[in-house]
Length: 455
Image (cartoon, helix red, strand yellow):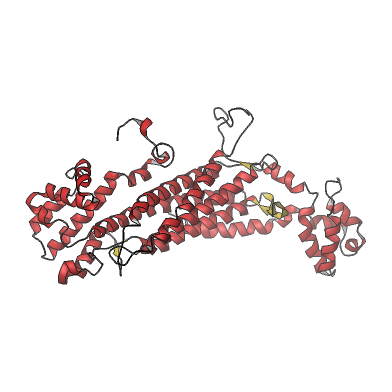
């Protein structure tokens, strides 16, 4: 392709994704991994006496992108119409007379699926780092705001007070669970195969098991214990659904930030460069949560990419090619986009602007109604039937915005006054006292995560 950037059409090439992750899926990187597998096969077969050692050395020396040129591979593929055979012939040419032993006993999927395992192993390492970074940023906010009172909301309505720190701790724990899921998933995901045309290894003769074990050991992989001609696609489907789960969590956190940044709430806002950044081409006052919205948008696409891998599990007999084309698109796109949105979300969380005063104002907006649970439970403990206490408070909070606080109304209610003094009512309706439990729970969550996320 020409170096003219105006000819680029995929947004991943110029708008989304970070260069280290994009380069992981470059054509040269993919060719290098395929050549690495071919070299490992030749070395293992030589060790087992299946091919001459000098020929294996020649194959290994030729198995580089400097010797096997991508242009030559492309040229051969245009005539052969077979991508792996184009690589095999290019490598054989580069290896000279030793090229007769290239790909000995193997089938195409032995190379492509094993190279894919190497690719996914690198990708998983990157994503683990992304999850670790985001979880640590959330923990830092949780620790910073462990006792910052904020109204909790259910159904979009005021519930009872929590702390902003606990909200962040909940998110951090969720991201940490994904990191654990990835650790559990990786051994099932990063498996290759070197077992021939339908997975039996017949082409390698009596050395079949040793060939596969030796190749995988050289590459730092495990072998699929029971492949067909391809590695079981349930493995990739599980990984794609893991990516979708992470994307959903990222969207949940981003959506919370977006909601809390609403003009009507304005308790938090994502970073905004006041000196240069523009929020709207026409409404100059705008400070839009564009990064959180970007996270939301990309997360929806990552989730959509989970569908084809599940359909790819259905193969005709020992294999067909219906999975191949979409995997070339789905896996790089899903991984690049997830890495991108996780990095962006971490930047938002790290630079989050938290308006503590606005949180306090919002908490008091319903004149103490968010503290009804505390008062109801205290009245029940003092002898008033719970249902009766609930009904009294339901009636007392039917009208808000009158300028009369719940504390004032409660002190005038005979049933409540019979069980609590005015000072006790004030203490019971104090949000700062009620959120101590949230602060203490935040401490417990953070303590566990600090250990789990330590280097």
